[in-house]
Length: 349
Image (cartoon, rainbow, N blue to C red; front, side, top):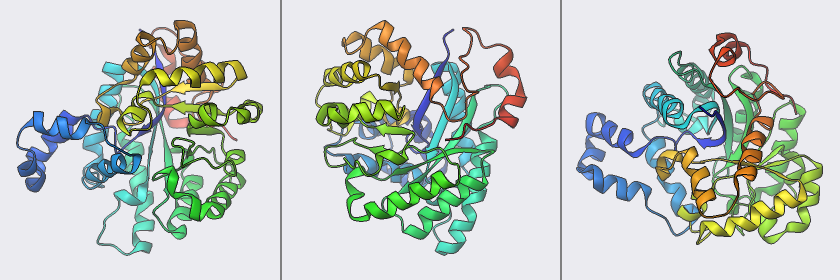
């Protein structure tokens, strides 16, 4: 069995529709009444949206039920599915911890509760029956105040046993009015020795070259090769990897056809820029990582040699995978050794 690494998956978008619908039926009366039939819910949950902002509204539906009490329920099923159906050896889960805290608390109390959320996610991700190496990326958010975003960076630095890096999410078009603020936060994160990635160049409205020098990986980044190929030389020199999530661009209306990504892959390979193929929101799309691979192959976006290069790049750029190591073709000693999960050393920037 082949083993894969997933570098860009959101906790909020990772819950497959069937699991979420069953949870609504058992635990949430209001949502159960709204979606009485599974087929109706699946159609609503997985359909394409017109814009990225409209698409991101779906995250609030899941975030509202991912609490300190329920996170273990959702994460166990996520890890089980990733191991059984996707053959993942390594998984980085990203999310905004503040959005999983109790809404009735004050801002300072919610900031304090974030550490508990990180620990819950970390402990729940360690499932002996499904030995995937996991780590967390904590997301700042374009719609959260500076004090909360800085607290997220501080927490990432304090919780390196669970956390491998920081990100900024919330729709890249919304960074513009606070660009200096996010530059400062990324500079601060790097000063703390944190690994960095960020949702950037996903849409034509989210292209900010000012942020690029502070990132080790670029979340999406497809509009660099599409619109600003002159930047690829600098991206290659910094050894930055693009986290390309093919189905997302169809679901958000960013691209009309997956074959438009051929330019992205061709220009990146020509420039020596690594790409890791990711799912972004595997549950929200109902498309798991092997199917992302298959779709790119069958649509002639990439060939098998390029696919292998992308799979290798995912392990090479993983923030918390033992540096320079690629898993064997069978799940043996390395992943069965629990010490790797307990004593994993996060790669420094």
